[in-house]
Structures are given as structure tokens and as C-alpha cells.
Image (cartoon, rainbow, N blue to C red; front, side):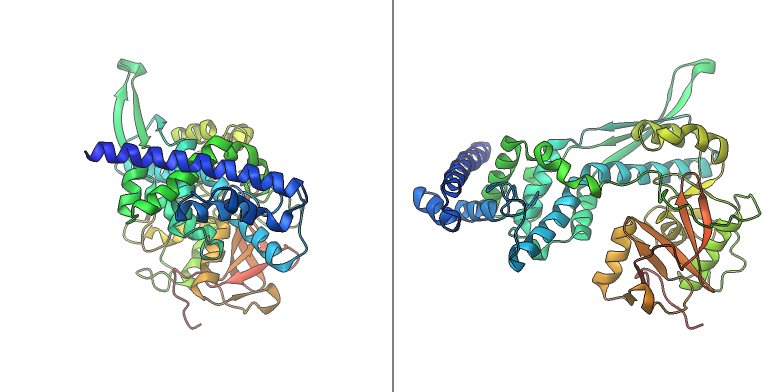
Length: 447
């Protein structure tokens, strides 16, 4: 009986979604006839038999086409822009949230990268060498559409209650994986292989876990069917190309950047003022040490030693990003500690002072990208502002779109700049930083 109810519920959602799409076609026809202001009303009058929840879906689909992929009236009504404040605000919010959704495929890759990096480091700290890394990924576009639909319904499709950070956190909690270590081959050809299996999403279970009632499940099902049938992910994905990450780092800078004079993989905490806590002074000392020892840059790393198997894995995952720098990375960074820009901050947060291992997502430091790290400070009400207001406090984060660094005092920043530059020291002035913040996940000591 339960299975029958599930099937009928999903069938109802599909049927209602078809009604929604029919209503959208009516609205578009009304708009083409010049009835822009009456489009929603005309659609509602033409389909009075729609249930309340689908009326809500209809209104949102017309007001925010394809949920969040672009904004009124660009898609349904064919206009390029609007000069009204309310629509302009909705457009900006929709593009921000849409960018977060459309980056989930890349996010899922980078999240798995972080997990793989952590597991490889853990095994190799135990003296177990890993020859090959294999990822079996069952998470696909269908799962992405369900995540968009379910998360949108959980917010009742109110764009003002959504944020890119919240979307990322939601998806982190729904990504499940399982690692296994085994031997493939025999004799000299035997390889120790780490296999990471990323599981498919279970939408019905997820909706139950979130406490969705029957109406909310129907709403999510209608959104899912509409997005899937319209091929929205593929159709509107190009709108968000600027939101995709640059795997080579901040490679456009050609100004002055200095390198350290040493080459070592040891992490020395003897100069930390409080190794048992996470604080700004020790973050700055950690960053300076990374600069002094000429750490390298590889996307998705955070201070671990770059092994052959980990590099091969990243090249396979990002053939046009990391793979494009294969020869350079092999010559300069293989066998040495590497990080990306925000990995410099996360690596300190995850550092275990007892054995100097870097343990993924530990000590309350989340796995955020550069933009998310800065935005989390803004959202948490931490001290932040434009560069003209930045105080002279070591361990502040300095930020610009897609990139972040650590202020070390006296007008200088240590940053993991790019694949070709690695970790360098630069002047704050003239670097193009847009803002500064106190990182919410560490303490700021009186100096």
C-alpha cells in the first residue's frame, strides 16, 4: 500500500508539472501579445483546477524562470534587462543563487577532492603508500536537479532566504561517500588502489528527513519534473560560466611577488604563541612558514605533501585545469607541500599540533572556497570592510573575487597565488584586494 501511495504521489507531481508547463506556455503567449502585466493572471484564470501548491509553483516559475537560473523577464518574456529596483534586485539574487547551484557539479568534484586528499594523507601517515586513486561517482545531473528542487522548496522558493553558503552547506551534508583500499594486480604489477564511491541521492528519503509533508513533496516533484523536462541545466548553464573556478589560481597578476629562501616539508610550531588554540597570530606564522619553505600551488590541496597518486587523480578529474600544468607541477611541486589560496587558511585550521598532520574539516574550520570563506565572515557579523578600513592586525584575511590571502603585517600578504607562482609574499597595496575580514573560525588575540 505504501508503494502504491508513493507511485501515485510521484505521478501526481508529474501530472501537475505538465499543467504548470502548459500554463507557462499560456503566459508566454499572453506576453507575446503584449499582455505583460496580465500574464500571471491570465495563466491562473486559464487553469483554475490547479491545486494551491501548483498555483504557487506557477507564480514562482513565471516570476523566477526555471527556479533560479536567470531572472524575470529574461527567459519567459525575452527581455534582456529591467530598470525597476525590485526586478534588478531579484535578478542579482537569482544570478547569485543560480551560480551557486550551477557550480554544484564543480563543487561536488572539489568536495571529493578534499576527501581524497585527506584520506591519502591519513594512509600515508600510517606508512601505507597509495599507487592509484579511483573515484566511482554515481552522483549525476538528475541528483543535481533534485537538490535544486528540494532545497528551493525547503525555502518556499524565497530567494531572499537563500545564500550561496547555505546551498553549499546543504549539499555538503547530502554528499555521501565510502572509501576502500585494495590491491589490484599481482607481483610487480600490483598496485595499492584507493577507491572512493560517491553515492546517488535518495530524494524521497531526503524529503522525509527534512520533514516535508505531502504538499511539499508534490511541490518538489513538480519543480523536478519541470527542470528536467525543460533541460534547464544544459540550456541555462552558460549564463553562469563566470562563476566557474580557475584551477590555475590568480594567474593574471604579473607584479612583484617574492619567494622564500628554504625548501622543506616540516611544519614547525615552536614559534606559535598558542599551538593548542586556533588564533590569528599563529595563522600568520603558519602562512609565513609556507612562504619561507616555498610551498607550491595545486587546486584543491591544503598543505599536504603532493604524491604521485594524488596528482594523477587531480589530472584525471581536471584535465583542462590541473592537467594543463602537468609538466610544470611534476617538475616543481611533486613531493612537496602544496595548497590553493583558501587551503592556506584551512590547512592551519585543520592542523593537529600533536603530530603536525592536517586533518580534513577538523577544529571547526569548514571546507569553504575563497568567496564562501569571506561571505561566512560577513554572514556571521565578524569584523570586515573595504580595504581602506583595514586595521593593522596580523592574521586577517584579504579577499577579492575568487581569491584570498593572509595578512602578515607591515603591509604584506602571504598568498597561494597560482600554479606557476606557488606561495608568495606580496604588498597589500596595488594587489587588487576588495575587502578584509576576521575569519570566524579562529580567535583574534590582543597584540
